[in-house]
Amino acid sequence: MKTVPLITTDAEAEAFLDQDLSALDFTQFRPLTWETAAKDARINMRIPEPLLNAIKAKAAARGIPYQRLIRELLEAAV
Image (cartoon, rainbow, N blue to C red):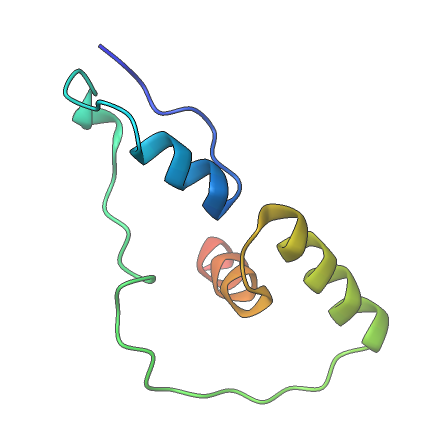
């Protein structure tokens, strides 16, 4: 069975999905609730500018919006 490689950018995800996935082993997937859940709560916090710049740089390197990266980090922490 075919497994999913480590995908770190949207471009890599699109390239992976552009191929024949009929032999893909779907047992390797797990539910992801936070990305599809309604985003109806807001937070506002002050953080040091260098920290925000580092988060934005890391998100850019992964090809995702920085707020998505922050959500991922919060999800992993709880």
